[in-house]
Length: 494
Ligand code: PEP
Ligand code: MN
Image 1 (cartoon, rainbow, N blue to C red):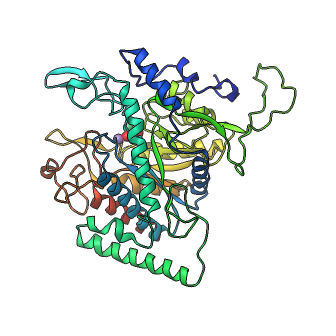
Image 2 (cartoon, helix red, strand yellow):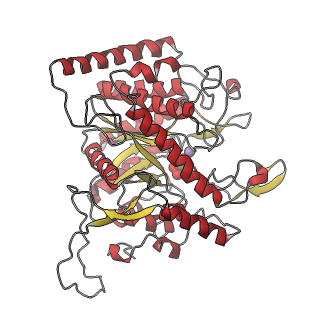
Image 3 (cartoon, rainbow, N blue to C red):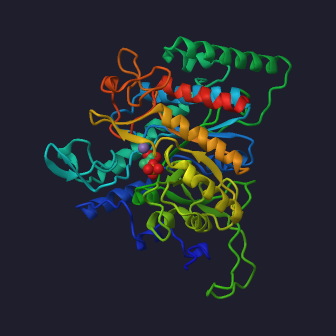
C-alpha cells in the first residue's frame, strides 16, 4: 500500500497533474487555457494567510466543542445572481440562522459561506440530453453555459469566476465593515424576510434577548476583545461583530493551482512540522534536523475548500492537490466510503494530525445514515485522527418530483440531522456543525423560492413550480432554513 504523504517535499502546486483527474474538463484550446491561467497567477489573492490561520484555529475550537460550524449557501452560484440584493440576503440568512443557533446552543458559531467562488459542479454524467439533443452537461458558470448551445468549456469563464468572486467578497467585506452584521441590530438583516407569524415571534424573542444581553455587557463594561473575525465589521474585536469565511468545492484544479501562493506563515501561528524521515523514506538523511518551514502554500481563492464525494479518490488528483495546501479543508463522506479508506485518506491529507485541518462533511441520506455513520465514527476514533464532524443533510436526500423537478423533503433533511445527532451521542462523539444549501433569494414581490417540500410553510409538490429558481440542487428557502435553525437550537437547549 502506498503512503502518499511520507514526505510533503514531493508535493508541488502542480503535482496533481500526474494523477488521474476525476470530473476533468477538456478545453478545446489549451493555449487559451494557459494564457488565462498565467493571468490568474498574477492576480492578487482573495484571502490572506492570517484569515486562513484564524479559521483553522476556530475549527480546532469547533472540534473541541467550544463552537459550532455553520457552512451554508447555494449549491452553485451563478454570475447572473451576483447582485447586491442576493448577496445581502444570503449573508442576512446566514446571520439569522447563526443567531438562533448561538441562542440555543450558547456557543459561538463559525460561519463559512458557500460563496465568492462556488461555481464549479461535479456531474454524475459527462453528457445530458436536452430537447432530444445530447450535449455536454452543464458544469457550472466557471466552465460552460447553462444554455444547451453554450456547453463548450471556455477558459475565459475561469477569469470571470475570479472577478465575480472578488466582487462578491468585496461586497461582503464592505457590508460587514459597515455594521450590517452587528449582532446588536439583527433586525437590520433579517426580519423583513420572515413571513410566518410564529417564526417572526420566536425570532423577535431571540433578537431582543440578544440585544439586551449585549447592551447589559456594554453597560457593565465587560465587552471583550476576543472571538471576532477577519472578514468582519469595523472595530477590533468588538463583541457583537461576527466572523465570516468563504468556501467552495475545490474542483477545478487548474484554477486552484493558479491561486495557490507560497506565503509566510503569520507570526504567532505554530509552524507545521516537517514529517520526520521515517523508515520508508529513501531520501538522503538531512544534514540537520528538519526545521519547521517559514512559508506555506496557501490557496488564496477561499478560506476553506472541500473535496466532493465524487473526487475524493486516494491517489487521485484532487487529494494530491489538497494534501499540500495549508488551508483547512473539508471532505465529503457518502455511503460508498469504507471506514478503512477514510482513515487512510486522513493520513494522506493530515499526516501530522493537526487539529482544525480536516472537517468531515457526512451526507448519507436519511435512509442510509444508520448503516454508515457509526462505523465511520468508530474508524476515525480508533485512528486517533482529529476531525470536525459536520452533517450535510441535503445531498443524500435528493429526489425527483412527479413533474420532474429535483427536490428534497424537509422531513428527510430533519430526519438525517436528528439521526446524526443521536448517533454521535451514542458513539461518544460530537456533531460540530451543519452544512446546508439554502438561499435568502426573493423574487420581485418579496416571495422566497419554492424548491424543497414541506417545512412550516408546508410547501406541496404542486407549489414547487411557482418559484423554482435553482439551476442546480434545490435549496431551502428563508422560512424553511429558519425552521431548521429552530429545531437545531431546541435540540441544543435540552
Ligand atoms: C455539493 O456540496 O454541492 C455536492 C455536489 O456535494 P457532494 O460532493 O457531497 O455530492
Ligand atoms: Mn449541491
